[in-house]
Length: 122
Image 1 (cartoon, helix red, strand yellow):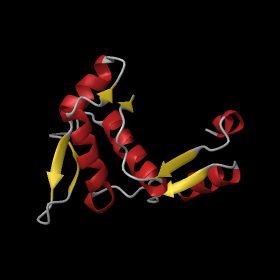
Image 2: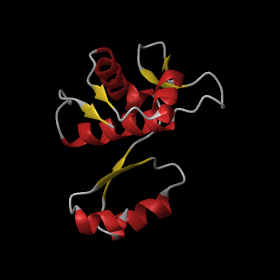
Image 3: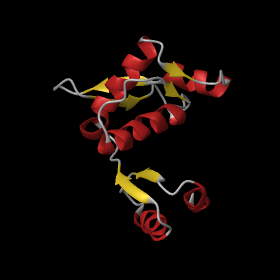
């Protein structure tokens, strides 16, 4: 990640604060802007809704990777009693990591700008 800063000086990383203090400090020391991305509905609800909209509107564009397609098919929206949603999966074997990375990137993007309206490129 630090190597990216040399190439792209405006690198921002989303980091879940839980147990990541050392990583966060190392990134900041290397010149990376760090944005807190807590996992759960409070932080991820609006970005999850944005991702859902991008999928339904055909604005989520990826390279056709079978892994990404499989993970997208595994992604569920866990709702709380207030209508907030967060990424979830049926079980531990249904991986969703690339999709959660997109949600986290949307959290970071929302921290610095308005809601994304163009295509989401993966």
